[in-house]
Length: 226
Image (cartoon, rainbow, N blue to C red; front, side):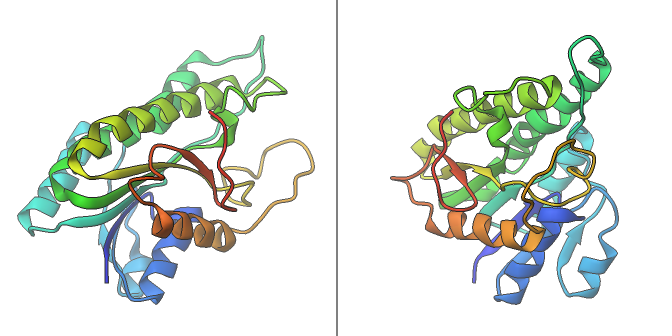
């Protein structure tokens, strides 16, 4: 049995990851923006009101884990936001908001739980192939693309630093998932459900080794370009 910290366990993909890991017998700690009462009712440990934009909340998360001497085998940072924009109508306050959540958020949390990771621990950060420079063939979505591209750099930096301590880092793309984040996306997409995305991301983390760390992987197993 491994101990997992899922950041952003309230809903969507993070919620599905928590449920699936718990069902297979792993110890799951869900860091939730809200109360996470439904997870608590299922027997999943919840640390409430963890806002990834808050230094105080990140410290409280780390202090809680340290206070209970909890060591983490796997951390999966799922918390994120998607906002739509178009050139000529960009809200720069929203650009900053998305960067604060999608880019700085995982770095803030990684730093807060750093001393809870041992040799052999794993860290996964859910970003998006929309943040890939090589895969951008359409433009648009400025704030989201920029924030996820920068999150990929955060993850790659963490890989170089944490690999020296025996911690493996992987960047994760869940696919086009039908969640609250994607419901306003224009266009006709072949969406998958959160449970399917969660199963693929869990499998990716199960398969992660020091030799395969520092890469960008789709939930379907494909490795993606940066």
